[in-house]
Length: 592
Image (cartoon, rainbow, N blue to C red; front, side):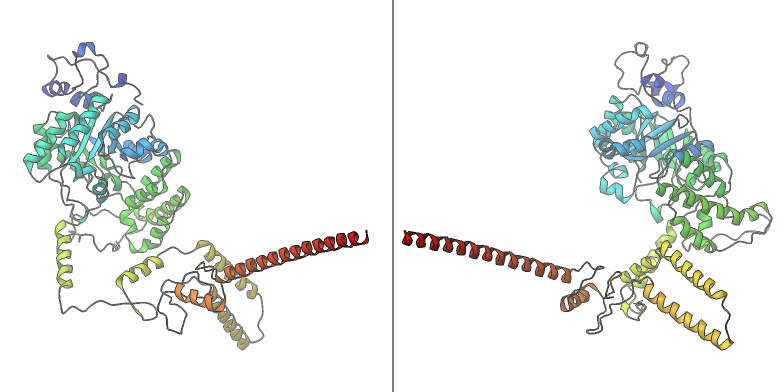
């Protein structure tokens, strides 16, 4: 780990032997107030930092939220990645939460070079977070490219690109105060001139490396489209610091083509790496081999379960979209341990390894992804379609397809002759679309495993208990089967899990509200409360305690009455004793 400035230091550049880029980069350090000959521990900058500390990386793994954790970074490094970024960390959480900071700084000696990325909009908080992290990495990156809605709500990422004064203050503050360089990851503007001025402003503020994502802030989700490498090429010519390109990288051939067309120093990829960790090696390994290797690293360097599940869904993306793997997809979604994840991986391996080895013929299977773009017809002489069990990129549908769908939906919505779509529940009652979607979500929930196991065990036990019995006649045997089936059905009806679409059981008046999932009386909350009030009952499902509260009130009233009666008796006894004492004294005086 970098624990001091010594590891980030280098002798001064010789003007006679250095190239122009190195000379320009060496002048970027605004902290230098004296000649470099008197500063043996000076901070490297620009191309000097890129070459001596980062070792001139060409293959870079992008910062990915909840994805580029230590185990995944090590997997990527094993398969060709030369530089990795940490996930994006929130600077305020990093400074305030020790546990968040400890989990974020998980690294090892093999995890170098490493750049840690922060997001935020407060220069002081950003500096505090960077100072806490600078001993664990080689540079600090500022996220200025996140286009998601959460970045808009938090006011960071690409939604700061119009506040140049604030960005200049953030970058310059970190550049002046840190012992390691500062880098930035940005998106472009539609205006080329504004993009150039924006990048120059960050360079002049102290950024020593710039990662340019050739998409605008609005290009995201179904409107992502292709990144424009022309902007990247122009910025590479206009700036004096190293430039990394991000976008349109699905294979190692894309990396080489991007470098050739733009002249950038390196290429960063995110989505391509998630679907194929061996992308930089130029190979397409089997998905289960990558999954096994990743799970081995997770056992050594633990990661959150959500991270693991997300990575496996990306690696097995094309397999999980096959209709025949719907059960395995549900099993993967419901796994909560490395052992359970590995079980799914082994099942997929056993299922598709014979096809991969050529022992069985793969004839293809339709994917269940309706939004996937249609594949072009393949000619018989060049079938380059990869089988789904190999790691391969996911190709998004073009934005034009999404716009056509929106236009068609808008046209249908405004068509007065269009028949309105109706939704009905299991009892034939019309319901809203929102209610139908909620019902579907409830129906897709996994069943209770313990309850299912108990039912299967009970069914198996009854079958085993009756298997050895000899029936006297075929008619009696049929009668017994009918009786057992009737009892089993009734038992299941009593014990079965209630569905969300069941209605309230109150017939007078005819209530159409949904039944409470745990109601003791199989009613909705309103009817259940009325029933409990009228009949003096309780309901544990709705947490209605009318009977209990009434009994408690009666008990308290009785206790108060008994206490008052006891007090009255005590007062009466005291008064009687006083009267008797007074009478005795009066009699004594008369006798005397």
